[in-house]
Length: 289
Length: 289
DNA sequence: TCAAAAGTGTTCGTTTTACACCCATGT
DNA sequence: ACATGGGTGTAAAACGAACACTTTTGA
Image 1 (tube, each protein chain N blue to C red):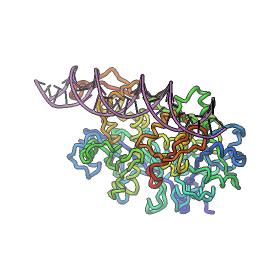
Image 2: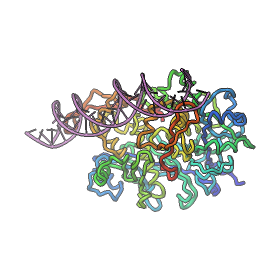
Image 3: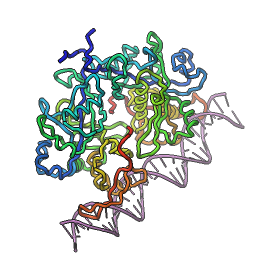
Image 4: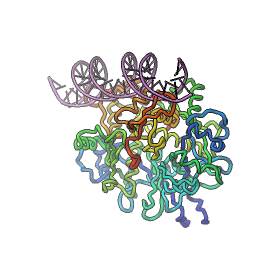
């Protein structure tokens, strides 16, 4: 091992990898053991957004690694996926930003370039557990949103709510106010990883906020080939920490410049009127930022 | 000098510092010598956006420096302002992103975290020239926009035009297409600095795109204490590379949640009906992201 | 039969866009 | 007087939010 040059900071990548679990996924007791322990085992979470964590020195943390001399930031991210998490599927990683507080790592001077991505739970589930205790931390769920809405009397003033913090706009022109777990002194993860998750989540929300195809942005067909509109809506609501109206959402998605198209099929596997199935209108490859 | 550890990348900061010059500023022949030489000395640029550059090994470049072990990214940025450019005024710096191509620096492996900011020309003008030949490169001007609009038959499809590239949205849901100088093989600055300027400019545009106070975001009262609406509009149009309608702009700015308020004064220093003067409605300090 | 979920019609208010016109000053 | 830039009125179009209603299935 070479001597560390203390006059220059070292460079690391930490990874906030999101995944979405359905109620059915969470019903599996083996899965349930790996998620945030403070969540009551009997609570009904509904569709839930999680972030992949592992065991750190003092608590849970995001997976990370130092950047090596020959690789780009993204390469270091892929190396974490492969070597630390054992994930082989191709995933799109994007930058969150740099985290550079001088004392953020108590042992040495490390600046982290955090990245984020999304992985389908079915591609992740076999990697859970193991030596590094790879697990999941709850970021958001219908339940978290509903509970927050009940406590605050609605979500009108808030533009996104999650377990890692929220943002709201008290005066339209003056800027937003954000409240993070780090502001409350009740950290969920080690070091500054709570902030990383919060800012990663904000990027995730942007992916769903605009008119662009969010799955193209994520690089993953998170809902599979075909899906109901209501599934897409629930996914978006949980991913963004908001609640949209059913009819508004439908009409927005059905306008001709939308990123989904009707298949001719319907799905009547659940109660109620059979739902039309939709699929992405463009292939995933060659996405632009 | 300590041996460089080649197994880890070094970390640098490069700075894209924007400034806006009026027609009057450009009339000064001493200033004119320091700006992009390929711009015809007699052309009428109008209000123009520039970025601060200096002499590199093979051409012009952005000012930069390696990050030291004890400092944050922003500190390195401030050190560049102070030690490289000789600027003492307080400026708000923001991150653009990381530039990490392995071969971006031909001599050694350096990852750059680019930052950007805005400085008033009057705070900058005395630093121009000197040993490092600190100068200015044109990013955008009314003329560039008008010329582009004339060539392309309007700006409707484009969401921002500049000398360093532009973006447009051919199909609303499929994403944007961007065209940079680097795509055309006609670089203006060394290495990947053209890209830095382009992405910095995009961030600048965002500052003016939303409902928030852009000057608060920049941390600079770029137009001084009081200004005409038309000055603000021209500033915004050039900063964003767009053309807005006079009456629409006015009504947007005059809505009660805007970031400016009327002073009771008027200015009749120019031809035409005297213009009402406006000022920022909130102090600059304590801005949020 | 009824609860649950899908899907549609209609209204109303706000925002965006465009166009036209009036106003006050320097030259 | 008139060109120049400041400022306002109005109306169509587009968009978003809300509400109520119909439809079709599984339980």
